[in-house]
Image 1: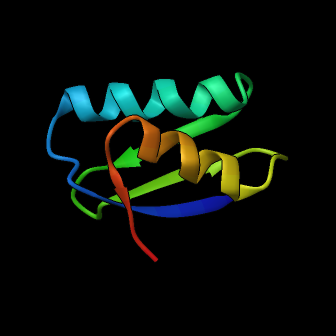
Image 2 (image 1 turned 120 degrees about the vertical axis):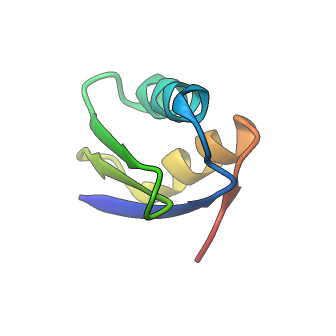
Length: 64
């Protein structure tokens, strides 16, 4: 399970955009976006780097 901090998420559109970006990397991943915590939890066998890059390409800032 990967937990990625994402800065700038604020609405349902953000959730949809991030879910879509993650699923482009691994369409079998389980994705949970927590707006309040500013986190995306991804259950996937893939490494975290491609998910982080996909979220950034979707227009969001990934934190440490």
